[in-house]
Length: 240
Image 1 (cartoon, rainbow, N blue to C red):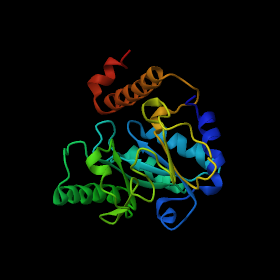
Image 2: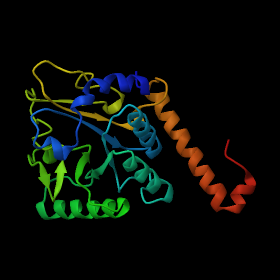
Image 3: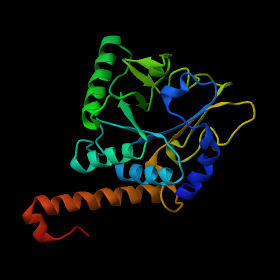
Image 4: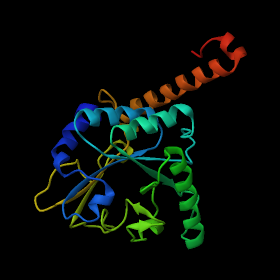
Protein backbone atom coordinates (compact mmCIF):
# COMPACT_ATOMS: atom_id res chain seq x y z
CA UNK A 1 0.00 0.00 0.00
CA UNK A 2 2.72 2.50 0.93
CA UNK A 3 4.83 2.02 -2.18
CA UNK A 4 5.95 4.80 -4.52
CA UNK A 5 3.69 3.42 -7.26
CA UNK A 6 0.72 3.59 -4.90
CA UNK A 7 1.68 7.11 -3.91
CA UNK A 8 1.55 8.29 -7.51
CA UNK A 9 -1.84 6.66 -8.00
CA UNK A 10 -3.13 8.69 -5.06
CA UNK A 11 -1.76 12.09 -6.06
CA UNK A 12 -1.77 12.15 -9.87
CA UNK A 13 -5.54 12.85 -10.06
CA UNK A 14 -4.83 16.12 -8.19
CA UNK A 15 -1.95 17.21 -10.44
CA UNK A 16 -3.83 19.96 -12.31
CA UNK A 17 -4.98 21.50 -8.99
CA UNK A 18 -1.62 21.44 -7.20
CA UNK A 19 -0.16 24.70 -5.91
CA UNK A 20 1.74 26.05 -2.94
CA UNK A 21 0.31 27.66 0.18
CA UNK A 22 0.87 31.26 -0.95
CA UNK A 23 -1.02 30.76 -4.22
CA UNK A 24 -3.76 28.80 -2.47
CA UNK A 25 -4.54 31.75 -0.19
CA UNK A 26 -6.18 33.55 -3.09
CA UNK A 27 -7.60 30.55 -4.94
CA UNK A 28 -11.07 29.04 -4.68
CA UNK A 29 -9.80 25.71 -5.99
CA UNK A 30 -6.56 24.02 -4.93
CA UNK A 31 -4.77 20.87 -3.86
CA UNK A 32 -1.76 21.28 -1.59
CA UNK A 33 0.67 18.40 -1.39
CA UNK A 34 2.65 18.54 1.84
CA UNK A 35 5.39 16.32 3.29
CA UNK A 36 6.43 16.41 6.95
CA UNK A 37 9.91 14.90 7.19
CA UNK A 38 10.20 13.18 10.57
CA UNK A 39 13.10 10.73 10.39
CA UNK A 40 14.81 10.41 7.03
CA UNK A 41 15.91 13.17 4.67
CA UNK A 42 17.02 10.59 2.10
CA UNK A 43 13.47 9.26 1.81
CA UNK A 44 12.33 12.85 1.25
CA UNK A 45 14.82 13.27 -1.58
CA UNK A 46 13.69 10.02 -3.20
CA UNK A 47 10.06 11.11 -3.09
CA UNK A 48 10.98 14.53 -4.51
CA UNK A 49 12.69 12.83 -7.45
CA UNK A 50 9.68 10.61 -8.11
CA UNK A 51 7.36 13.61 -8.04
CA UNK A 52 9.64 15.58 -10.32
CA UNK A 53 9.55 12.83 -12.96
CA UNK A 54 5.75 12.99 -12.88
CA UNK A 55 5.51 16.78 -13.11
CA UNK A 56 4.43 17.19 -9.49
CA UNK A 57 5.53 20.04 -7.23
CA UNK A 58 5.02 19.92 -3.47
CA UNK A 59 6.18 21.38 -0.15
CA UNK A 60 8.71 19.60 2.09
CA UNK A 61 8.69 20.58 5.75
CA UNK A 62 11.91 19.87 7.68
CA UNK A 63 12.63 20.07 11.40
CA UNK A 64 15.54 22.06 12.82
CA UNK A 65 15.12 20.57 16.32
CA UNK A 66 15.08 16.95 15.22
CA UNK A 67 16.95 14.24 17.14
CA UNK A 68 16.65 12.03 14.05
CA UNK A 69 18.66 14.11 11.58
CA UNK A 70 21.02 17.09 11.50
CA UNK A 71 19.71 19.43 8.84
CA UNK A 72 22.92 21.48 8.99
CA UNK A 73 25.15 18.60 7.94
CA UNK A 74 26.89 18.92 4.59
CA UNK A 75 24.95 15.98 3.15
CA UNK A 76 21.56 17.23 4.33
CA UNK A 77 22.20 20.76 3.07
CA UNK A 78 22.91 19.22 -0.33
CA UNK A 79 19.62 17.33 -0.08
CA UNK A 80 17.76 20.56 0.72
CA UNK A 81 19.19 22.33 -2.32
CA UNK A 82 18.59 19.33 -4.58
CA UNK A 83 14.92 19.25 -3.54
CA UNK A 84 14.55 23.00 -4.11
CA UNK A 85 16.39 22.68 -7.43
CA UNK A 86 13.57 20.45 -8.67
CA UNK A 87 11.06 23.22 -8.03
CA UNK A 88 9.73 21.95 -4.71
CA UNK A 89 9.28 24.33 -1.79
CA UNK A 90 11.03 23.85 1.56
CA UNK A 91 9.21 24.89 4.71
CA UNK A 92 9.67 24.54 8.46
CA UNK A 93 8.28 21.55 10.33
CA UNK A 94 8.06 23.32 13.64
CA UNK A 95 8.75 21.40 16.83
CA UNK A 96 6.56 22.67 19.68
CA UNK A 97 6.19 19.52 21.77
CA UNK A 98 8.12 21.15 24.64
CA UNK A 99 5.27 23.70 25.04
CA UNK A 100 2.23 22.74 27.10
CA UNK A 101 0.22 25.89 26.47
CA UNK A 102 0.13 29.02 24.39
CA UNK A 103 2.11 32.01 25.61
CA UNK A 104 2.22 34.65 22.90
CA UNK A 105 5.72 36.07 23.44
CA UNK A 106 7.33 32.65 24.06
CA UNK A 107 5.60 31.08 21.09
CA UNK A 108 6.51 33.86 18.66
CA UNK A 109 10.12 33.85 19.88
CA UNK A 110 10.31 30.14 19.09
CA UNK A 111 8.78 30.74 15.65
CA UNK A 112 11.43 33.37 14.91
CA UNK A 113 14.26 31.16 16.16
CA UNK A 114 13.36 28.10 14.11
CA UNK A 115 12.56 30.26 11.08
CA UNK A 116 15.98 31.93 11.27
CA UNK A 117 17.83 28.62 11.50
CA UNK A 118 16.12 27.13 8.45
CA UNK A 119 16.23 30.31 6.36
CA UNK A 120 19.98 30.53 6.88
CA UNK A 121 20.40 26.90 5.90
CA UNK A 122 18.45 27.24 2.66
CA UNK A 123 19.78 30.79 2.06
CA UNK A 124 16.34 32.28 1.45
CA UNK A 125 13.29 33.30 3.51
CA UNK A 126 11.05 30.52 4.81
CA UNK A 127 7.51 31.11 3.58
CA UNK A 128 5.49 28.48 5.43
CA UNK A 129 5.45 26.07 8.35
CA UNK A 130 3.62 23.03 9.66
CA UNK A 131 3.62 21.99 13.30
CA UNK A 132 4.91 18.61 14.45
CA UNK A 133 2.13 16.76 16.30
CA UNK A 134 0.00 19.87 16.82
CA UNK A 135 -1.80 20.05 20.15
CA UNK A 136 -5.31 21.50 20.53
CA UNK A 137 -3.97 24.79 21.90
CA UNK A 138 -2.13 25.36 18.63
CA UNK A 139 -4.97 24.23 16.34
CA UNK A 140 -7.20 26.73 18.12
CA UNK A 141 -5.02 29.55 16.74
CA UNK A 142 -7.09 30.22 13.62
CA UNK A 143 -4.60 32.38 11.74
CA UNK A 144 -3.28 31.80 8.21
CA UNK A 145 -0.11 33.80 8.82
CA UNK A 146 1.97 33.76 12.01
CA UNK A 147 5.21 35.70 12.25
CA UNK A 148 5.34 36.31 8.46
CA UNK A 149 5.01 32.58 7.70
CA UNK A 150 1.96 30.79 6.34
CA UNK A 151 0.49 28.31 8.81
CA UNK A 152 -0.36 24.97 7.15
CA UNK A 153 -3.09 24.53 9.76
CA UNK A 154 -4.55 27.99 9.11
CA UNK A 155 -8.30 28.26 8.39
CA UNK A 156 -7.76 28.60 4.63
CA UNK A 157 -6.13 25.13 4.52
CA UNK A 158 -7.52 23.17 7.47
CA UNK A 159 -10.95 23.15 9.11
CA UNK A 160 -10.67 22.51 12.85
CA UNK A 161 -14.14 21.00 13.21
CA UNK A 162 -15.49 17.47 13.58
CA UNK A 163 -17.19 17.49 10.17
CA UNK A 164 -15.24 19.64 7.65
CA UNK A 165 -17.40 20.90 4.80
CA UNK A 166 -15.18 22.93 2.48
CA UNK A 167 -11.61 21.62 2.78
CA UNK A 168 -10.78 17.93 2.60
CA UNK A 169 -7.72 16.92 4.61
CA UNK A 170 -5.91 13.63 4.03
CA UNK A 171 -3.02 12.35 6.18
CA UNK A 172 -0.99 9.14 6.24
CA UNK A 173 0.06 9.46 9.92
CA UNK A 174 1.03 6.20 11.68
CA UNK A 175 1.11 4.38 8.34
CA UNK A 176 -2.62 4.64 7.71
CA UNK A 177 -5.10 7.05 6.14
CA UNK A 178 -7.08 8.18 9.19
CA UNK A 179 -9.25 10.59 7.16
CA UNK A 180 -9.75 8.32 4.16
CA UNK A 181 -7.53 7.65 1.16
CA UNK A 182 -6.86 10.63 -1.13
CA UNK A 183 -9.43 11.00 -3.89
CA UNK A 184 -11.36 13.73 -5.63
CA UNK A 185 -14.77 14.29 -4.04
CA UNK A 186 -17.80 15.81 -5.76
CA UNK A 187 -18.49 19.29 -4.47
CA UNK A 188 -15.08 19.71 -2.81
CA UNK A 189 -12.63 22.10 -4.48
CA UNK A 190 -10.00 22.49 -1.73
CA UNK A 191 -7.66 19.74 -0.57
CA UNK A 192 -4.61 19.36 1.64
CA UNK A 193 -2.75 16.05 1.40
CA UNK A 194 -0.19 15.34 4.11
CA UNK A 195 2.28 12.52 3.69
CA UNK A 196 5.42 11.53 5.58
CA UNK A 197 8.21 10.38 3.23
CA UNK A 198 9.40 8.04 6.00
CA UNK A 199 6.24 5.96 5.45
CA UNK A 200 6.90 5.27 1.76
CA UNK A 201 9.30 2.90 0.03
CA UNK A 202 9.93 1.36 -3.38
CA UNK A 203 7.80 -1.65 -2.46
CA UNK A 204 4.80 -1.92 -0.09
CA UNK A 205 5.49 -3.05 3.46
CA UNK A 206 3.86 -3.16 6.87
CA UNK A 207 4.63 -0.48 9.44
CA UNK A 208 7.06 -2.65 11.46
CA UNK A 209 9.07 -3.57 8.36
CA UNK A 210 9.09 0.01 7.18
CA UNK A 211 10.58 1.34 10.41
CA UNK A 212 13.11 -1.49 10.48
CA UNK A 213 14.26 -0.33 7.05
CA UNK A 214 14.51 3.26 8.31
CA UNK A 215 16.43 2.12 11.39
CA UNK A 216 18.84 0.02 9.34
CA UNK A 217 19.52 2.91 6.95
CA UNK A 218 20.32 5.22 9.87
CA UNK A 219 22.61 2.61 11.44
CA UNK A 220 24.42 2.15 8.16
CA UNK A 221 24.99 5.89 7.71
CA UNK A 222 26.16 6.31 11.32
CA UNK A 223 28.45 3.33 10.91
CA UNK A 224 30.04 4.92 7.85
CA UNK A 225 30.47 8.18 9.77
CA UNK A 226 32.30 6.38 12.59
CA UNK A 227 34.51 4.60 10.10
CA UNK A 228 35.45 7.84 8.36
CA UNK A 229 35.96 9.92 11.51
CA UNK A 230 37.52 7.42 13.90
CA UNK A 231 40.53 5.41 12.74
CA UNK A 232 40.28 2.98 15.63
CA UNK A 233 36.69 2.14 14.77
CA UNK A 234 37.62 1.90 11.12
CA UNK A 235 40.12 -0.82 11.97
CA UNK A 236 37.44 -2.77 13.80
CA UNK A 237 35.33 -2.93 10.66
CA UNK A 238 31.60 -2.41 10.23
CA UNK A 239 28.98 -3.42 12.78
CA UNK A 240 27.20 -6.67 11.99
